[in-house]
Image 1 (cartoon, rainbow, N blue to C red):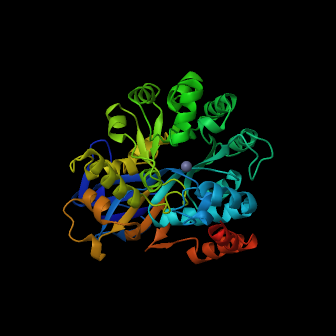
Image 2 (cartoon, protein in one colour; image 1 turned 180 degrees about the vertical axis):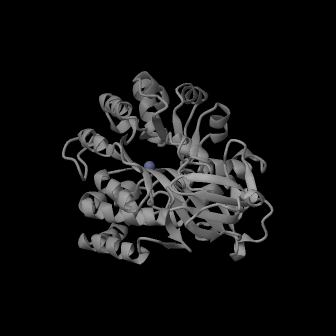
Image 3 (tube, rainbow, N blue to C red; image 1 turned 45 degrees about the vertical axis):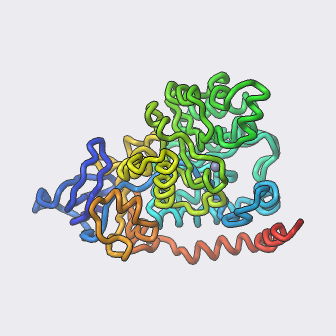
Length: 442
Ligand SMILES: [Zn+2]
C-alpha cells in the first residue's frame, strides 16, 4: 500500500540536514520519494493520502538502551538509596516470569510507539517472550538476553543467558524487524570468558551486543583495586572492544577510555535521565563526539528513567549538558535531534535502513502535531522538538510503512487492554501488595 503525506514540515536528518518547510513523502514499506510540495508530480499513484499541514515529519526515534520487561517496577521506591536491593531484586525474584515479562514488554512498546520511538535495543530476561511482543506490536527491535554470574528468573545456572542466547539468537535471524542478541550485564558481574563468548555470538550472527559499562562507582573502584584498570581498559585487554559493542552509560570515562572507544569504534548508549536521576553523573558526551565516537540516546528501563520517550531524554540532555559545560550554545537543538534519530540508528548498525527520511530507507517516520498550545509559534522545528514538544504531541507513527499510531491512538492494539493485561499479570503474583510492604518494612 502506498501512502502519500503532504504539506508536512519535513526534517529529513540526512547528511545535509535537508528540510522541506512544505514537503511530501511517498512510501510503501520503504520511502519512495521525498521532496518539496512544489515538486510534487501531478500523476503520482497512491492508495491513501494524509494531509500533514499542522505537523513536523521526522524519522522514527531510536531508543538505544532499555529494559522493557521492567514496567512493573516503575516509580517503586524511586528515591531510596538502597533501591536495587530493597525493591527490585527481591520482587524480580518473586514475581518475574514469562507471562509478566511479555505483558510488560507489549505495554512498554505501546508506550514507546505512542511517543514516536520506532526502534529500540532491549536487554532483560525472557527475551524470547519480548521478541514475540516486539513482533506482535510491529516494532523494529534488537532484543538481547542478559547474562550475569548468578541464577536468574529465567536460567538455572550462573551465566545461563549464554546458552539461552545460543539458541535464541539464530531463531530470529532473517526476521525483517526483530533481531535477537546477547547482553552481559556488566564487566564486573561476568567472567572474562562469558564476555568473550557474548562477543563471539555477536560476531557469528552479525548483531550488535550490549553491556552496561562504566556506570557504577563500585564498578570503577573494584576494577581499579583488582586490576588497576578502568572498565574500558579491561574490556580492551580481554579483546571484546569492537564496532559491534553498544556500551550503555559510560558515565565515568578517562581520556584514555575515550581514545579506546574511538579506536575500536565502540558505540555508546547515553542515558542522561537515568544517570542523573540516580545522581551518578553526566557522561562526557561532548568529548566522545569530538573523538569521533558514535553516541545515541537511551531511556534505560522504566524503573531507572521512568518514561520510555526520547522527548524527555532530549530535553534532559540539553539542560544537563549545557549547564555542565556552562554554555547555552553547546549542543544546539538539531544536534540533539540527530542523537535521537540517525545517530541512534548508527549505534545499532542500522543507519543504512533507518534514521533519516531518504529514498530507499525503511518507512519509519513520525508526525508531531503543532496545533497543541505548547507548539506555537515555531521558528525552528528542531528547537520545537527539543524544547517545546513532549511525547503527547506525537500524532502518527509509521514503521516499515505500516501505521502503528493514528491520531494519538494505537492502530492494531488497545492501550487500555494492554494495561489490563499487565495489571492482571502483576496481580497474579500480588505485585502491588509486595511492593507496598517493601516500602514500609524497616
Ligand atoms: Zn540499563
